[in-house]
Length: 481
Image 1 (cartoon, rainbow, N blue to C red):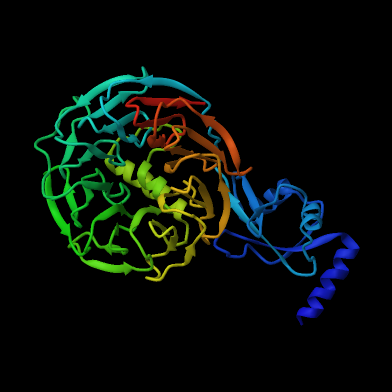
Image 2: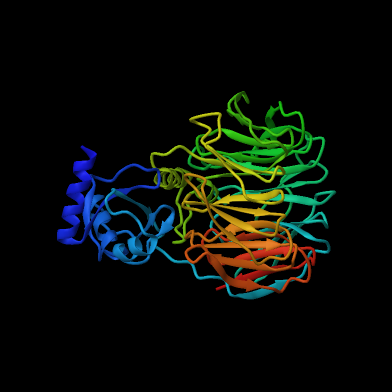
């Protein structure tokens, strides 16, 4: 039967110069039946076909991939160049693109002094209007992005501020220190809201908030510590609700997922999955041969930004915010399970679908040194990884397949961040530079020197308009398009 189909396809093609194609989404689900497309069909024509097949009322932009390579020419030219057999059905994967475009950052718009020791963490608020930084000088600083000047110096920690985290409704900021204490800050005054939250016996390694689509206004967040425990807190009562114990070594990273579970990665080589009403361990993800350093979720961008997007809408109530956040989350996730990627000291990464299986979907190899930071693109289509091998690598966010290596840094890469439209990737390195990489061309888009020493922290604002960086030279830099 197959032979007959292929013979018929060949005859058909000779007659019309057409190719039999099967359109599919990034998960591999076919869109309609296989169809004949002319060899002179370009991405523009394919866009029309997909919009029609999906019955989109408003036309949306798509990119097209054949065997993980983007189709940027006519079908015929691609087939000829890659010597692809036209007798077989050609699978073309369509990927939705952001309707808006983010301008690449090209210049430093402000260098703001203030911290007296290294800047260890930077984070934009979910609406992109405020910025917080944590430093070795024991302070958190809030910055006014309109005037590009310091707003508040938040004092209360007794040791280095290792992490800062905004609630996805933008109402709260929490920071964690090397002393193991957490402080909730009053955003109107820059003063602590009550006493520090104590319980952890060693330093804080990460903080993550419960997503706003699950609970609004935001109240609960989870902290992870070098002491091997994670703790769930209520920001309103400032009490520890649950202690998640079970790891035998330090927890290095924590994420509160969109399904309501918490993921913790540890130096004991495991990732644990917890439910959050009683703190029960649901699942253990094993596979890494060394410390787990970094975790990322495919839905992370919408979890972080909640109801806020690049349009700067205002919300009348927590209920409205919750509703919009849920719509954004469901749209981003589609029918696929939430994916998790882990990066380790064993030089490898694993892609997981924890709701489906305790076994990894793929093992991702290629880095020559430890993997320091992993991050999904906002649309979930890509995974980026930063390593001490001085490279940044790009992987398919659905399959985990290697796509490209970005080389240019001459020192370890510490942190990465994505533009809101998933088209650009930012990296900060020990070599004192920031670099912006173009995902489409797989090349360096912009080299951003300016820091006098190692760059420890970078963040691209969720609205895509600004980049912030900080490091050993103690200054905070803001970068614009």
